[in-house]
Image 1: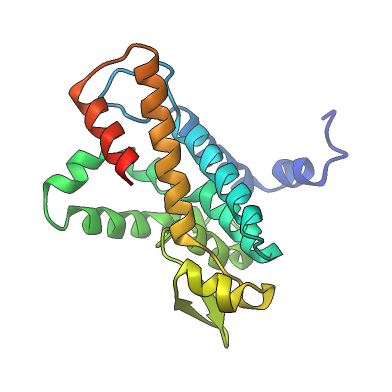
Image 2: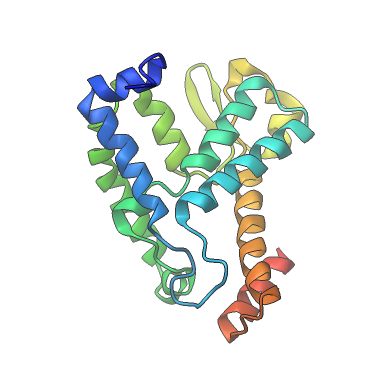
Length: 206
């Protein structure tokens, strides 16, 4: 009640569905990454998403991205793991263990996202879909149609708000860097395991 002067707070109080959406996102603070390995410090999926968002934003500023590019990269980083609130965190070794499993999981996530879309205004749907589906693909909008490109293409030809660019490749880099920091910090704190060694070496190579 003390914060009713904030427009966002009033909307959360007035609109049940919007409040449920925020609550759903907040559940990611209870989901711990690297669940199959003991780690210190522990990292929530929500915390990881924020780190990826911040890194993506800073990297986009560094390459002189236009305003929409900064916004899209930040919010894709912030929401890129949102579908995990529906499927939980499935560790990468499991996803890679069966051919085609990653694709099946992604399809399931997109089907379950229907529940998320029911909580938010219809005018948000296109953006949330962009932030959560094919999040590591670089895209632009040409003649109101989404086209897959490369980050280099965006920098060379599409770095303007009118193209609504999003650097999926850059966000993937930020995602891998965040994962490396998580693994590296755990090892610096004395947590040793074959899984952690493999992850650190693989991420360092990337």
